Length: 202
Image 1 (cartoon, helix red, strand yellow):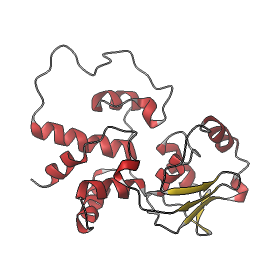
Image 2 (cartoon, rainbow, N blue to C red):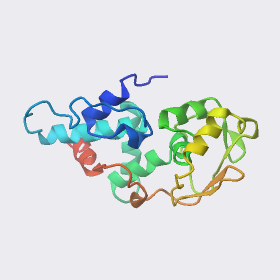
Image 3 (tube, rainbow, N blue to C red):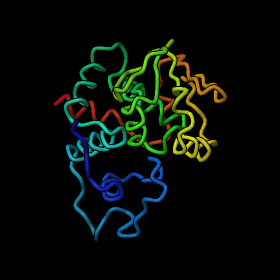
Image 4 (cartoon, rainbow, N blue to C red):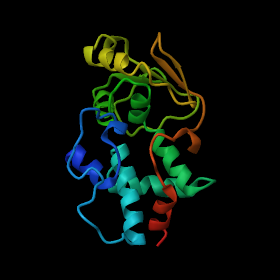
């Protein structure tokens, strides 16, 4: 399976996002904190659009071909393409696992899903890109609830509230998808999805 192996802190600096916002609390850098060395030339319109696409791909851990497929899927749906794209990305099973606090990062959530620790509607799903839909129930497997890493993550993420589109029973570790993710539910990252739509519309 293809994956990105770029250093997290370096990539975050290049894209202008905080590693801590992605769950990498210890990934910090003091070099050139504003992501600039001296005065850089003003970025072109294309450059801004491309950087926004790269940023969203990096946040959700998606490579180019799959990202383009998501964009095409978003175009076919009614409504605004940019908002549809973010809704699709939020609906990935690895993102759900991350949002619920089972993992500190989306990369860690992908690993947990790949190892088969979660079920959807009672069936084990080990595909991180699996898209959840309203009515589906995501559960941490009974045999996986004793994992020290998961228990530590849940303790560290006790402050993290599940998004409005997920109904979560923390005692039984059961999450029910009650709605499609809305744009206003994705407010923890500065994303300008219209730039991505403009890029792909050229």
